[in-house]
Image (cartoon, rainbow, N blue to C red; front, side, top):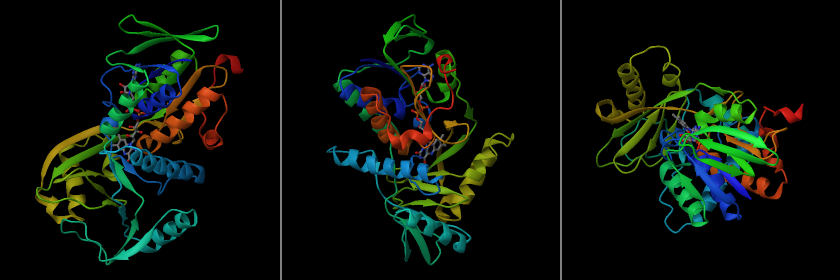
Length: 356
Ligand SMILES: Cc1cc2nc3c(=O)[nH]c(=O)nc-3n(C[C@H](O)[C@H](O)[C@H](O)COP(=O)(O)OP(=O)(O)OC[C@H]3O[C@@H](n4cnc5c(N)ncnc54)[C@H](O)[C@@H]3O)c2cc1C
């Protein structure tokens, strides 16, 4: 089987790895450099908390298990940091209700007193721990997946934007900006923000919701944050020794309203300082803005498209949690032709001309 995977972010890398491992002849075509899309500007928390509906929670939980399995198979899995999260809320009754629902779904959560984060922190007397959570260095993991794919014979083509996609008979012709023409039995659209344009070229439709996110890397020399901290107002995670990464959904909602980036950066830092007072006068190493890959409706778009044989999508938010699992399941579907029941709720909504 000849497969062309479009996009070398974490999603494309994971699908390509599993296709190549199963014996397919794989080419990964990337418009720029690998991991420079959302995968390079992400908070990359591994979590299934607040992921609804229940099918989506289950997919994310299985995604977390897949990360643990992948890391345990690799001698130096230096991208994987299962440090656990501390979940905070101003409304403890509401958080308790939510926690009970997720516990009834089998998600490990426990109330603990006397939690220490490393740096001096302002925490309530008891906090909710999510010990199975963690974070990954998404760029390092993507590089690892691309290396694994290459070891199985896959070819990575950076600086190779796809500008044409046509189906003739039983195969696809993929045309790149440099004039290269590739033939494939299978095309996987893992192009992140570029996925709607690829879908249109294939003859289907895919819409993404706009969802920018501001990330701040902040230096806290000599200290290491022990756990991720997540609250409705702000989230913090370790970013290696002496560094913390910060984000806030509240601040993100203001990214498109014309507010000066310096004001938003200050706002984000002050929110974080309410948890870690030291951050009130910490040095911002880097502010970055990324674009989440969120299919309209919020749920992933994974798998074959009716009426377009050989064309598949791998487009999702929470792609860091999901990519290793989705990559394996989608590759199995492509190789065996058997749909995986766990992916059924997340099928692409678009359809090709032959489905009518
Ligand atoms: C601020 C922020 C916070 C986030 N937090 C989390 C989190 O805590 N946990 C989590 O799991 N997820 C999180 N995400 C989401 C996660 O980062 C993404 O879902 C994931 O990185 C998507 O990976 P991808 O490979 O699908 O897309 P990308 O990484 O964007 O890769 C797509 C690639 O396709 C290439 N491409 C596009 N068009 C073409 C073309 N025509 N030809 C060839 N190549 C093309 C692009 O250059 C790009 O490299 C966050 C995202 C953001 C922005």
